Amino acid sequence: MPRKVAAVLAVVVAQNRQLSDKMETVYLGLGANLNAPREQLNNAVLALQTLPCCEFVGVSHHYASKPMGPQDQPDYVNAVAALKTTLLPEQLLDLTQRIELDHGRVRKEERWGARTLDIDILLFGEQIINTERLTVPHYGLTEREFVVYPLLEIAPNIKLPTGTKLQTITATLALNELQQLPL
Ligand code: A4P
Ligand code: MG
Image (tube, rainbow, N blue to C red; front, side):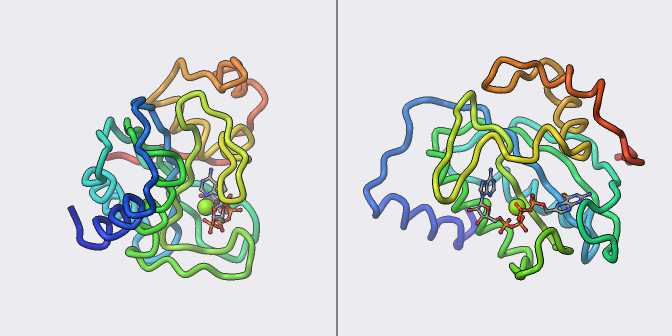
């Protein structure tokens, strides 16, 4: 386990927070548009594969996508990864934010600006979470073609916690030049 990730986990445990006794399936949205985006996503997957209390399940193809938000930035590469975990949602967020920082992510004031690596927690089992740090399902999940299509690639029958099948959303969701990239 990388030392920085181990350090974050140690803090989590030191805070006396319990691990859940339930294994949840989690879907993570990965996005990058700076510094060799495909490499950023591949490295993010390697890091996700070493997370404590997690079992890596798989990752979608990479998808080239047009930037949502400011248009004066490079196109993005997006993917969705799945893992199973006994971590609590905010423990997982601590670890994914650590991975973002380890990959040179600098948080800026500008909303939706360019980034080396963004990891969003899209779904955490069937949980609905609204805390200061976490909104799950991710607030943009159903409106973003670069999230919906890679997610459906690895989980074609996935349902939102409301019971809606994600597949039904594609009827009204524009592809917006989304392009699956070869492996
Ligand atoms: N936070 C709340 N809920 C979540 C969640 N489900 N997963 C909080 C992850 N974080 C969550 O995130 C800001 C805060 O959101 C975190 O501290 C966490 O406590 P951030 O990653 O620091 O900031 P951000 O990503 O810049 O903000 P935001 O609004 O989440 O941006 P998005 O929605 O991630 O959008 N265009 C294309 N084509 N592809 C992209 O991937 N991404 C963005 C960023 C813009 N345009 C894009 C893409
Ligand atoms: Mg984010």
